Length: 139
Image 1 (cartoon, rainbow, N blue to C red):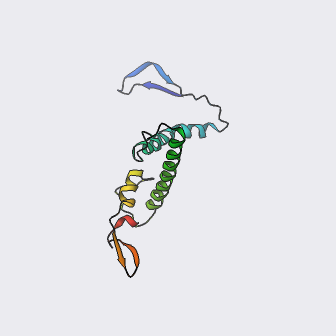
Image 2: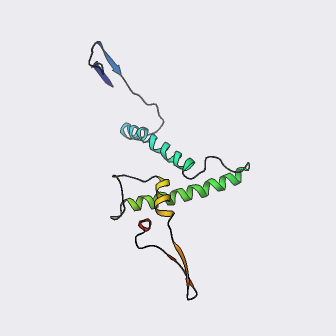
Image 3: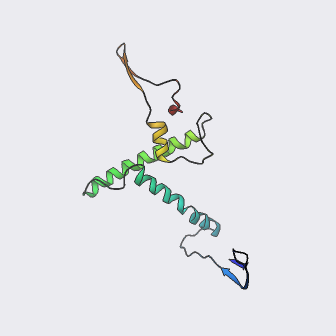
């Protein structure tokens, strides 16, 4: 509950402005944990947006439920792998970060770490990939 006696523009109020925030829930956890879950709601919206836009799963291709379910399952699996790669790359000492971050967007992980220039080398009946020494996407 918040009680204000002065408005944002500095005007003194004759009667205090009282604001109360309440949550109705069936969760059996502490009020502090419920408040934290409420504030993390925006984070889950960010994840949902990444799945739709960065993974290009906004429009499912088929009219068949089973086909779309399989595609969404594979998409979520790929999303979780990319999230793990992104989390490990943040803690790597040689990772180039512009600013301190707690996590990387999936699009950033795909652009910086998955899409890498390489050369296919066939030599002595062996096939290998050749990466540049200066290629930072392998971090």
